[in-house]
Length: 158
Image (cartoon, rainbow, N blue to C red; front, side, top):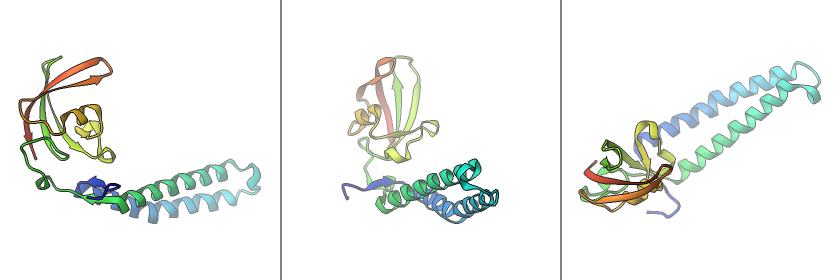
């Protein structure tokens, strides 16, 4: 596996490809229209609409460039690529928080794919790092904003 690769799920890769196509086709067309509309208002040196449209174009091109770079480095990984005996990327880990006695479940993913609202935890986050390579029954300790927290690994699945 390449050292500069970005490991992604097939679903996330497809969503990035769709976003890139949407931005290249519709995003660029919409921005071009806004620029044309703003130009029709006259003097460009004092045209706030033109400046805003040009700034939006710049942001759009930055996003397109970032997506292209990510896609060029993307390497699809599947849950079956890793065993279930330890925590790896794409492991679904059920944890018990010793501090509040609540159970939680996370899917460990690449930093680019992380999304706390969907319980997708980055393998580079403090908790993600502490979980990697551990097995069911292990207790890990990680630093959180509220202080140190211990978690017990209850299960590992794909």
